[in-house]
Image (cartoon, rainbow, N blue to C red):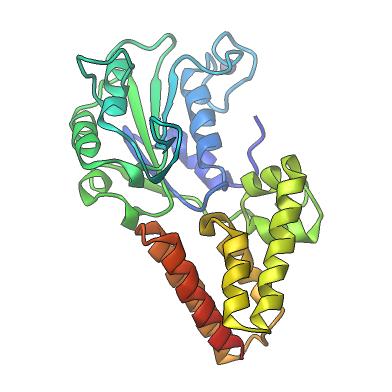
Length: 295
Ligand SMILES: [Zn+2]
């Protein structure tokens, strides 16, 4: 299991006594990978670092590891406007067969320790969060729970206060270069190995993202209407906007106040997106802001 960077966390994690953790940091930086490594070490016959050869280490997926994530699609197959971790995913309900986190974590581990990961804990619905809170208050002695989120501010304070935060910072570019030396890919990755891997595994999608970002930069020099068109083509802001931010440096000098204004507009657009403001509204607002900054 190759983890790039995060050396300090790998040294610290096995020594921490907490049962509930909050892993924060940018998407693709390696939080899930470290959670799986932690599970491997907790269950390895030889302890940390996991040996990779014992009966436990050879199992992939590991039977004592569970990931709960928000559903991106509604029951009718449409993409959900608001991804959410549902109550049934956390607590058992009589009318479904679905195995919940509570069910899973209440039975003994196959080896030594069970680890349940709640991926994107900022998307826990209120009922699901309350159900999870009960587990966090009194987890079984053989269990660890890891909440994953971009930052602690996005997670409900009641969950944060019962967890030990482990902050993941971007991986240095020198390490990322062991995966790829393509400058476009590295600019896109912004310290996240998962984003490098995504770009390498999806070359066509990545090329499209690069050329559409270039399209926004070119449209910015013409008109707000064309900028809006280009932003719509660029699509989902979550993936594309941080990259656009890096590329904006081509249009401005670093000291230019308009550059700062443009970056602020991007940050606010991302916030608005996290707060579920309509995509169309965000894009229109952003087109106007970016256009006025670059005129
Ligand atoms: Zn082992």
